[in-house]
Length: 202
Image 1 (cartoon, rainbow, N blue to C red):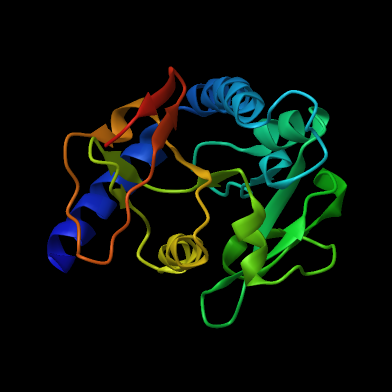
Image 2 (image 1 turned 45 degrees about the vertical axis):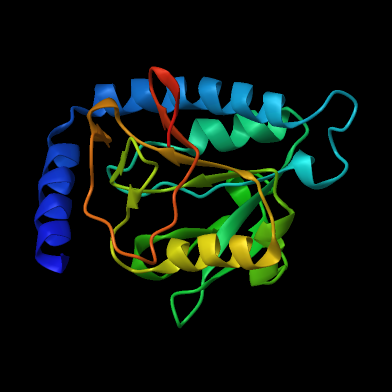
């Protein structure tokens, strides 16, 4: 199983590196529009700025990942509270509020993290929409990550808390696959968000 996952990760990462920069930029802009629409659907009228549904957990893309910079600012412009992860020493994730691109600072492993106050790993359980990174997702909703386990912990934490946010993985079009190798601990997500729109899974 690990060899199968490793081979697929290697192939997908190679395909991402081969994407022209202009294609990645167009994808980032399209994802911003789709994520904004998805967040709007998850936030009942009149509830922006209050309650769990008004909080979106997202992340800052790095390298050749589908770009999230336009998306983060689009969500914030809608009046949503956006939480970003802060990587802990044990690979778990703390969270802090996004206050704009000027409030991001370089961190370990080439990441950018928010400089604001830490809210604790449980803060993600208050989100109505959780946007997750990944390399691929299949039609069952099973996600292939990079192998660090950080977001496996996030999904397990949400399940333990009884939280049911909308879970969406941000991908390029070709990364929505018929099947990815999965293990018993893998938890499904609800949507793949690609430049062409939201694809319901499961």
